[in-house]
Image (cartoon, rainbow, N blue to C red; front, side):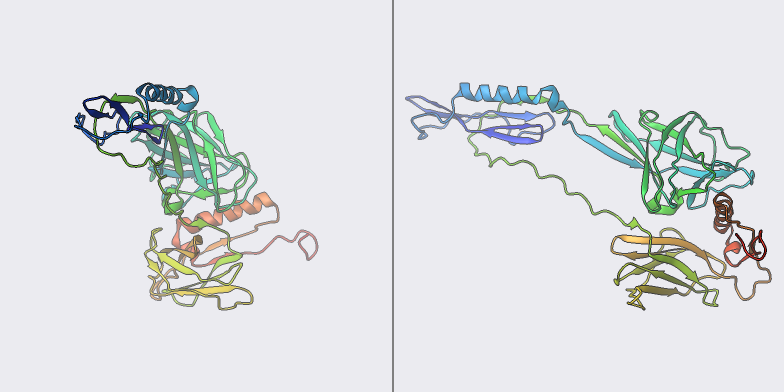
Length: 419
């Protein structure tokens, strides 16, 4: 039996037989692909007086011709396109953003990356690509999870400077970006957006990038501090095309029936961020050690609530069912929290989730209270988004601002109505 492994297929031919008047001998030849060991060490067995069919089942000449045809077919140019490819995913080793109106502020510990045309917000990322083992890079894609809806995209630029620090980057000391290398399509909240960096990332090494936009809106994406939603650099490399090494194995051992190797099973996908029908919304319970979460979903189902002091969460509820099945409303109160502390939370159903953060109220013994006051938010979209973006920024940067906020009012431009 001739066994040949070519381009992922296991091919077997019937045994070669030579019949003589004195003795009957069985000759077997095995061809193996480089890197695949033969099943038996080379050997020759002379089988005395073995009964054989009067006609050989497969002639040596025919077998050689078939073998040659298979090897030639496997070496055709079109077959090379079936070479194995490998995909590796890297997350940033550093990321942050800068904001022009606050030139001394650092935002490296926040769970979001932000970009705005004016005033300038620009994000910075650093990746280290390693473990390719000499394989050539076929493609490189940057994947970012959008946390806002906007038809405008973002632009990635190369950055030669490798000295900026995640915890020290500010608008005042930020290195200037290089030439733009890729642009994205629209941002959809909860969905991944991709940028092709194949022209920039060619080999192993450390790469720095900046993200920017031309629109005067606060566009947000998840940062590496967000955990599972961190930015991803997906590298696809070309695997080596197998080469053939012919080895002669003469054996009388029967070979198993040939089958195509089974494909490697894929692992189940992780959680996917989605938009709830409403919420999640936070409701202050009057206690500095508790927080109530309220949301609406599209159907009556079962949820789970996770929370913790980091994005790894650590604590979970039991099953949470709708308290109002007509309107599909859900709520859960987290207790046992520390006063004046930031917490991460998410509500999960199946493989879908929505998440956020909150700060608990100060303790009863607190002697000072920090709160945020703002106005006028106006009706102009650009101005409103600027104000809203700043409120969100302060919320994430300082726990005190989530304790209480006050809107001072709205500008009345005509009589007694805002028109």
